[in-house]
Image 1 (cartoon, rainbow, N blue to C red):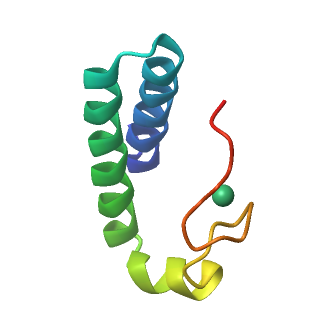
Image 2: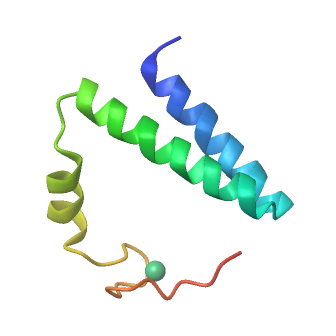
Length: 73
Ligand SMILES: [Zn+2]
């Protein structure tokens, strides 16, 4: 399985946990998504922190606030 598929699988599991409202599972899935995102960036030789800061400049891409104020759905 390509590395990016692991990330997609974890994102799917995170979405499911959010919909189900299982707090313990949500935290575990966020950890999995962060781990696989970091791994994929490393494999692709991308400095994830540098890329995110460069693109978003420390602000939410949606609401533009430094601390996101987007409503949770
Ligand atoms: Zn926001």
